[in-house]
Amino acid sequence: GECKEAWIALEKCVEGEAEEESGASKCREVRIKFRTCLFENPDYYEPLISGEAKIIANMLTELQVEKEALLAGDAEAISKALNKLRTEELPVSAAEAAAIAKAYRDLEEEKEEEKAEGSN
Image (tube, rainbow, N blue to C red):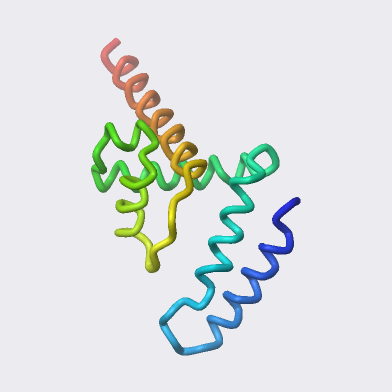
């Protein structure tokens, strides 16, 4: 896909990082470039984006992030919450926040459906 070069650069960086004993990540910019590429090509990378968004939405549910901000796709609120989980801070793009918000809404709908089925 469109992000092949960014993926290869990220793989090389992470491999080099693993060989070093320094805990500081030297791959931050490479990760940002790769993630930006994914969200700039959502049609091609939809399965990856939605899968990751669902995982993140589950984690944010466990952290009990402000529900209204999450449902609205508030990038700043999502970013703050995610940075509690990540080992390094990475910005959350508007597209990533929207994908996470959609996954969160889907999870909330599933919970409501399970409650409704359980009460029947």
